[in-house]
Amino acid sequence: MTGDQGARREGTRRVAIVGASGFLGAGLAGHLRANGHTVVTVGRGANSDVRWDPARGVIDAKGLAGVDAVVNLAGSTIGERWTARRRVELRESRVRGTRLLCEALAALQPQPAVLVSGSAIGIYGSRGDEWLDEQSALGDDFLSGIARDWEGATLPARDAGIRVVLSRTGIVLHPAGGALKKLLLPFLLGAGGKLGNGRQWMSWVSRTDWVSAIDHAMRTPTVDGPMNLVAPEPVTNETFTETLGRILRRPTLVPVPAVALRLVFGEMADGTVLASQRVRPAVLEASGFRFAHPTLSSALRAELGRP
Image (cartoon, rainbow, N blue to C red; front, top):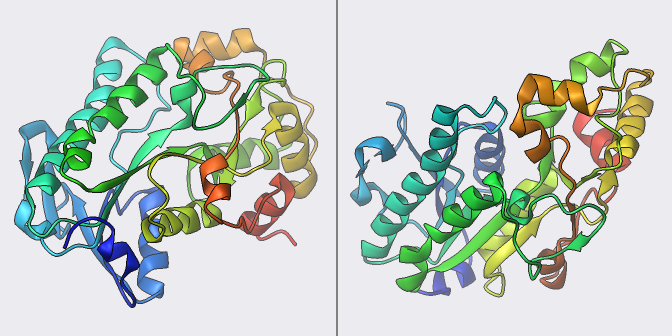
């Protein structure tokens, strides 16, 4: 069975997840299992169902036989200073692993119906107040280049006839990980504040909606190619700061100047926390997806358990 036949199948699915133990993967795996689906974990750990070692070019392709869908969340964390060595690691952990996976999937018989492969809205670069959707031009900075190559590494799967969804994810909100986990302690201590001038746009999504959107992409044959995985209402950093402070009932009077961020993080500051990306989830909305948390306030209250 090839193409989208598996996506149309009734009943349970067998889904392989690369990175199932991570912040995003764990949420997705829990959701799928709770809904009766089988999760096949792919990773370097001894407890993984399928052993995978991109650095050595090793993957147990036989362990992927019979899966209906694959979700690829491979990639080391962006949030460390970009030394020369770190730059290589950031790229290789995404590109080499994705290519290895896709070559293995292309050789399978039968093939999975769909691959949802990780990407990021960083592919657009920092664009000020410009609205961005899946048809927008791509950026030309360091993170844009990584994301281009990351998406390009899925070509063996697409050429083999597998539907490939490129999930361009924004800032995922949940206290268990990501940006929100890092912000909670300083905000709870009353040391929260805007970053830089606060005018940069933040395109975010609750982890609840992120999980649902990945599931939706697997089940919806019309979702193909780039898919912005962000909520429909991005906010400026200043608005994000004020909203989080209000929900936590803490002051937000300690701004962090851009010069201080650049001093600590170097170029990474301009590519991440100071970057401005005002992104619209056009493909998701056109495919009928409905966000449980379309506004920042509703997302933060739900994910933080603050009614």
